Length: 139
Image (cartoon, rainbow, N blue to C red; front, side, top):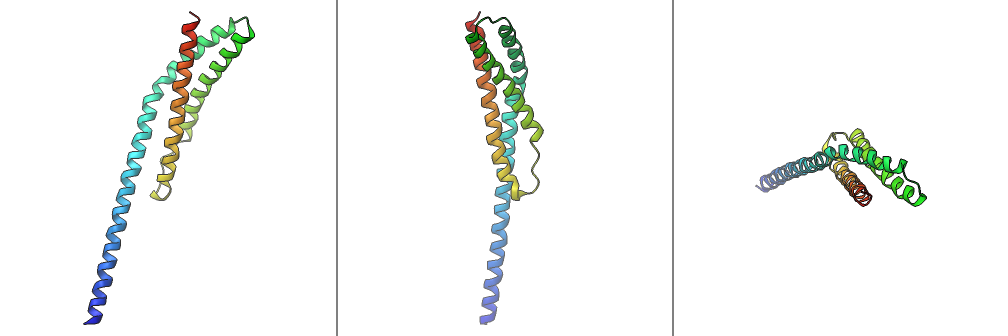
């Protein structure tokens, strides 16, 4: 009788461990999908802005070409650099991004990618804002 109780206890314990690990795997899968969705939403939000970045860079570069003072040139060069960096950062992020394989590393990889695309977004938005402000001031 005692052996039956111990066997039953071991069976129930093993079953609960299996169920628990399946639930953890499901939770991780959901988190991975949510992270991927957020990353792609951020990308899809800022990627269309690259056309604006390129257009602004062209406009600022034209001002830079016609600038006569060093102070004027320095600020315009900084803006041009930031616009160029915003474009390059997006292209580099897209080129480097890979769909993660396996749950072991996927969660950490996607967490890092979420930070990276947020930084790209900030670079794009801030460079656009700086260029637009500069162009308005010079009109």
